[in-house]
Image 1: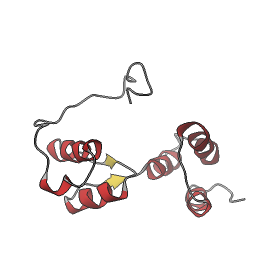
Image 2: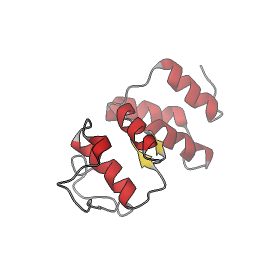
Image 3: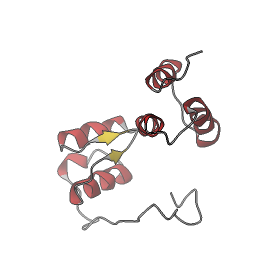
Image 4: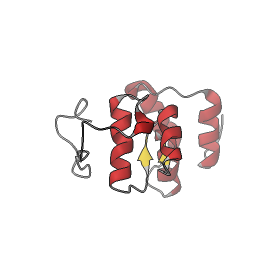
Length: 118
């Protein structure tokens, strides 16, 4: 996040893993960021790991770590009333955040959140 923000928002806590020099054996094929995220999730018994990396999600699932991607998080936020327009948020993430979603995935997300699919 620090690559995009000069300082972290107040709701974000910076946590370091206990042993940065040791990886969980299952994570050796992942990039360091994904491996550390999974390790930290395991260390703190996180309720949820946010990652869009399919390989990382599979490994996390094998370690009994619940995962969700950005779109899944947005769907939850919309269902709980934190987002007014899913279509608008997806559009902003695609235009400004570099997110790519297929039309089929976008339509399913809009359907799941009760927005009209056009």
